[in-house]
Length: 107
Image (cartoon, rainbow, N blue to C red; front, side, top):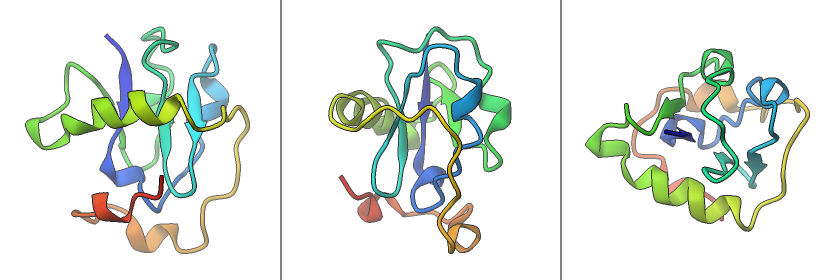
């Protein structure tokens, strides 16, 4: 089992989860974070730290979010590791819990 980041993170990119990760498996893109499934040790420390519930166990992913398993795996191979909290985008609150943001994901 591993954890992944889902659609709610797109354009929000809160990084509260990053500092608690003992294996530095978070990677940062322009407007989204991903978790490297090969590095994640299933410790679950990050999940409660996400203020918008964008982190899910791959076992709890719904059919609507299943494609995020592949997205996390693919983008973690090309984006840099993030180990420290950063400020969220200024408009992050406006994007919280909005559906249909996948087309806004910047790779």
